[in-house]
Image (cartoon, rainbow, N blue to C red; front, side, top):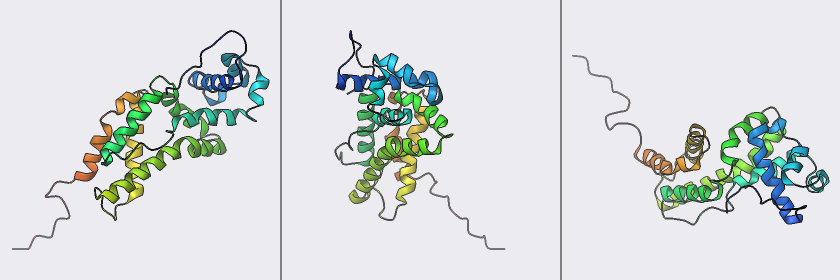
Length: 210
């Protein structure tokens, strides 16, 4: 299901529809105003609800923003495809289908930069919107170790760091376009499994003196 603007009808929306409309309004307004510029008044106006409707659901603006950002995380890890690259491509496809029409991916760099001034908010965004994705990558790495694709003694944390950070870099360099991630996981896994050193690389032994 793609994340986007809830349809605007005539009159005030009902409860469930109002909830979706409010979250969609946050997603629309964050790229325009950032964390600091967004207001409850603006969200209410965009969603077509009263401010009291928002305050009945969320105690603070930060609580509302955090819930809106939770839409970034997949509901669950995709089924086991039989390979690490396949698992990664599956989650890219899942996220692309869900978020291709959403502003969420392209607004995250600004949101994280703005949140750096509020450590408590940043920690909550990381916990609810970032770490669930990382947990899926950790599951993928464990699957790969179990299959024998990766060594049992591999530094799992470092592998997850690479699998997480390289796609984020591609998103940053492509304006949040999730479509730019297609094929990236396969290239990352090939590099990890094949290594980056040449066959002749390594510590050079001291040459015997003549």
